[in-house]
Amino acid sequence: MPATPTPLLDTAGLPTGPADIRLIVTDMDGTLLDDAQRMPDGLWPMLAELRRRGVLFSPASGRQYATLARQFAEVAEGMVFIAENGTYVVRDGVELSSDTLDASVAARIVRKVRGLVADGVDVGAVVCGKRAAYVERTDEAFLAEVRRYYVEHRIVEDLTAVDDDVIKIALFDFASAEHSTAPALATFAESHQVVVSGEHWVDVMNRTANKGTALRGLQRALGITPAQTMVFGDYLNDLEMLDAADWSFAMAGAHPEVVSRARHLAPSNNDNGVLRTISRVLGL
Image 1 (cartoon, rainbow, N blue to C red):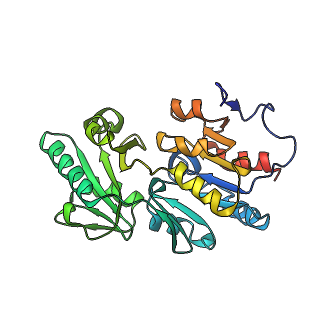
Image 2 (image 1 turned 30 degrees about the vertical axis):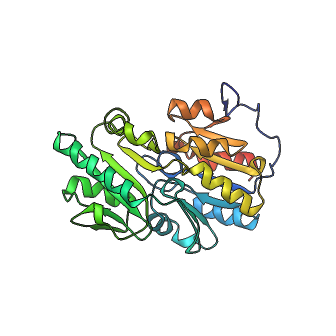
């Protein structure tokens, strides 16, 4: 990897003609969506053109599958959704891969969160299952954040007794996930992944689970190489995914670690950076 990513507006490192891209994978929040969480102008016509050219477009997000499928309902047929930070990959309603958490581990994390709340930390847990997301915190401020990412969610009395295949535990910290909740989960980091996926979100998953693992599995299944793969990301849960593509782009304003890991820089999510970059590289 180069020490300094190539800026998109420079010609160095970018093709003079259309590149042989067969798979485009993009994060959602802070990447494809603008800061108001709106889809970029021109997305649907571009997806139609990519489909015509035989290029697979795949959203890869910490969001649940149901949320992603609803957002792309108009064009979901044949699309691969890398959901829940790579722990659940689905195409046309059929599971392609998943990486489930042991129930006892999920219960330990829930009890840890309860302890943090008792100590005054303003945090809430979301137990992410294949069928739905589950919460036991019921205040509107917390539920408003849950609804943004988990359209299929249920309030339960006891998160340690969820009857579903658990694929991830997501924690929303009203302060700073990176500086507050994540350090408090250090004991789980010894055996599992504790990933800061946003300013206020931290996810706990199996050590084998990430967007990069899911992407590499998809590449093998489809016979697509890293050289034929384009990836866009902005935060720490995108790092492994960037490693799986030769055409890896960090968004302008991305986390510094993401910028240093990517091969190139794209314009920001508020400047339609994903679509502008696709148009440039594929010669659309």
